Image (cartoon, rainbow, N blue to C red; front, side):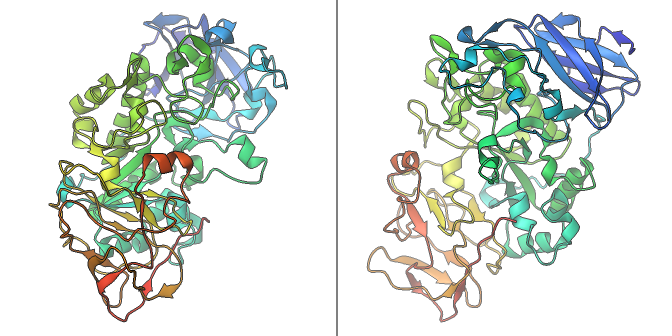
Length: 547
């Protein structure tokens, strides 16, 4: 039996000090928290340890002899009263929200749900008593080392050119990358990728979500998969599918290699909602730890969630412990792994309180005063699906407006890049340029493009594999030069306040209805661009295909 001491309430999560590990879990409404230790395969629960100390809602204990590599999870006891937002069920093994590394994947089974699944409209009110442990991934205790060794490039915003990419999509079918590392973090540091980024002149690579995420049950049942990753399971752990044989150190080595090449790394992060869905979703972590604290409930009816994200739930960022979780996650990625910036998915949800969106929300101010995060690039996607959910010109102070420096796109769909470019305030800050991921060589560096314009952005996005000449359009001429022998578009934007693109007849028809309402003017850069000065050299466009 393990020797358990009082421990400390901070830092939260599992922290090894060389002799043992301190465990700390926040749950303001729980009556008991039990730490569960597992064997190295994660199949057998070998010990249960009650964390008897509770300080300001944080349950904690220090266990001697627990070293990095130990697998663990939690069971949390409390009241089962879903009608009032309380969904405690000690039969369910719960993932530590601060887990740094995961072992295993979710194996979908009805036992993962806190209630007994049925066709009854009140099914979620009936507690399920099956043990979910064998179907759950386990958290792994890791060493607290700072892994990154390089210095950050610290490139100023006006000189920033962002290349949006997917860890798997960018590397999975690259012919110059070794098969055994394709689709992993290690592939991003391959010389073939770095030389390509340097050749096209980008200064930052923005990775689509790399936090551990779920493969949704309803997708797997249709033989589909969650490719994008906007369904977070663990904010402190990387997606296991992106880790090769190098473990967590592989991420830091990749960051070091990109930094040495003068390239920054920005993460697309999803702190607005989690993978647990609505009241009928599974109980995997936060829902079973303290549902009332972690999530925004529907005002007057806490059985249901205030679905501001369209994904079933929304994190309660006004709660100090939830805010702390987000801050701790950001600091970890910035300090341990050397990440240079963050793009906040549905940032409006992060700044919502009982009165709606507040650009002066405490979470935004916490980021701006933090000595680590204040050095990072912060990008806010200016919308969600809640009331007043489109705030294009009202990004929080210190944040770049996501619509001003990136694009609404359907990568790999052949639709090209889309961005709203009408009615944008001239007061927006000087933009960065966003390049959508491509294996094509767009030619010479784009650093000569004008960065002092007060208008939104210039976009390059591949569309199809075919090689075609630009065809003439009868409306909206775009003054540009297409470099001979390449697919680069170097635009000199002289049209007063806005960048102007050729409007696609069906630009909005391929977007979801909510997007069509939010972006009444949607422009598409396609192979049918009107060029006033085009060479006879074909334009080569390449689209990634998911590996």
